[in-house]
Amino acid sequence: MDYQAIFSALDAEIAKLERIRELLAQNGKVNDVISRTLGKRTAIKKTVKHVMSVEARARIAAAQKRRWAKTRRAAKKAAAAVAVPA
Image (cartoon, rainbow, N blue to C red; front, side):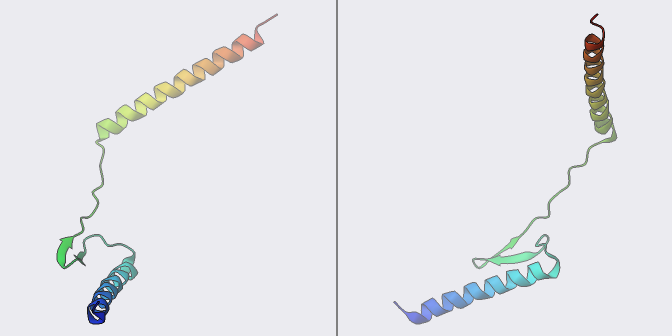
């Protein structure tokens, strides 16, 4: 096996890892950065936040309030049942 080929492959891998380390050292994120992967340029996509509409948040809040009210009613009913026996 040719040692020069092994050394050149190791040097290429080391260069790639050093580049990745530099990118991570900048701000800890690799988003929106073009990285070299196996000789091809690949854009790393930025994650997209999912935004809920005001109406969706209101529906979720109303449903949660109904669940809390149901739990409170059940607890109140259970407390009344325990206190009533004579």
